[in-house]
Image (cartoon, rainbow, N blue to C red; front, side, top):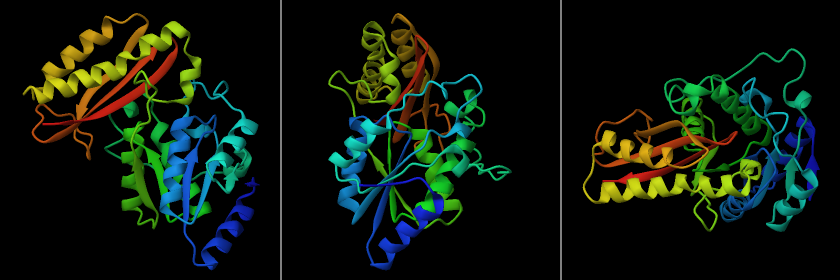
Length: 281
């Protein structure tokens, strides 16, 4: 498997693939891979002739008091895992390679970045959109696969790709969960065994919301209230937000008429976790 750290070398690698008339799928990651990431890569194998991943802990999407310095990293482990599912190349640039001295260009996606995670993490989605735009330009993929766990991120990237007429096709992949329902995340490693058990409340409240809608409850205020009550009854879990939003615009809804997304963010101890589920009326 190839490991490329230089932007110009990565562009040359991709040009060779396209010159052969073959297709390329990109799976962007921040490393410390888990089964959820590997599932995205397996999906990529069904979509294109070649799969590459990027591993880059992007500093521009972290706030000043977030976990950039402590974010888990283990490249040797990641390399073995990626190779095990058929990845042929890892783009592994350093910060100076992606943001050299004098870097001054950023991508802002408006409106859908204002609520949910965007409300409490100013600048986060500017960093996400910027690094994804750079990765799409460098790697020139025919498609890129993103997990639905980061639902707002997925919506932001889709909006950017549409608005800027990028040629890449964005593929959404369902959230991969542990046996107990907890969404897989690199940050799960921060949780103590007790916190790990408490964190399963996220999946439980999403299932509860789905059951309420199926039973005929379409008032989002009522659904949110029951969700909040259950989360608040769980030790060490503090709510950041609980919202029910339109699946495309991410605008908050008063009533569920057709389809909606319940999106959650909490802190379990010091660890911030997110999750979501589509609710069908």
